Amino acid sequence: MALLTELADDLAFGIQTQSTRAAQAQEVRRLRNEVKRVARSRLAAVLHDGVDQTMQALNLGFKQARALAERREAR
Image (cartoon, rainbow, N blue to C red; front, side, top):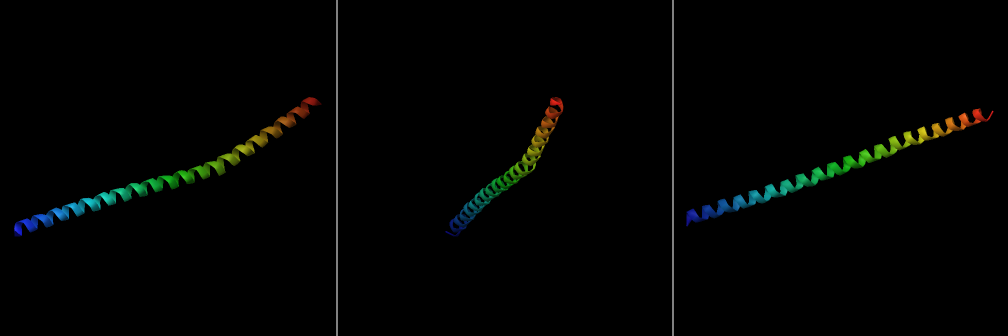
């Protein structure tokens, strides 16, 4: 009887350990996905704010240069 009780306790411990490990692995996956989501969001914001503004400034500069060249050609 004592041996069966010890075996049952060992099995219960093993099941609990596996359950805890599975929960930890799931939490690690969730945290990893959250970190990726935040990093992508930050990168998108940087690209949108930085690159978009630079492209708009370049576009405006090209338009001004074109307008200046057209005025000089019209003379």
